[in-house]
Amino acid sequence: MTVIDNHAVETLFTEARTHNVWTDQDVSEEKLRELYHLMHFGPTSMNCQPLRVLFLKSQAAKERLKPALLPGNQEKTMKAPVVAVLGYDTEFYQHLPRMFSHNKDAKSLFEGKTDFINTTAFRNSSIQGGYFILAARALGLNAGPMSGFNNAAVDEEFFPDGQVKSNFLCNLGYGDASALFPRQDRFKFEEVCDVL
Image (cartoon, rainbow, N blue to C red; front, side):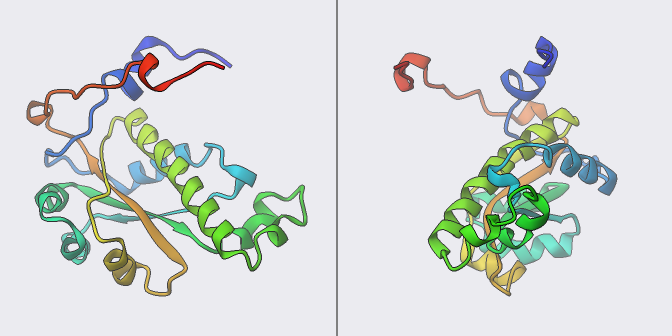
């Protein structure tokens, strides 16, 4: 593996910021397809890939989401060029014969085990959500992930059959850097890590 250069590290991590104010620049469907294509290579346990994404681009679609948002998240979300609803498929294991084809019994590990299914789906969709944010940054987009919303209301509106459950939301677009808050503090290694 090649070590990425410092510019790439800055793009993905050290200079990247969470945006709340957006320019009017459109995000094309082609760009969203690129984002998905890039992020879908990230690893998940047993290659289970439970993430499911709704890209809300139209104002009508975003208005359907608005009642589920906490008041402080409404304006920035309505003005974002795209709002991604990142969810997880509780029937992901049905696809394991294809996605984890070298283990023909993988599906049976999950059948009838609701807690195991939900834990696996939530954990791995969260991991994929991290790849999603990094993929967006790698493609020149800014991301504004958030959890300030009513999951049950989102699920009722967008996933009424109950198979997919919402995990978190992520606004996407080209952020207005002049409106960024000062960067907040981060824990130092010694505060949160131990080497055993």
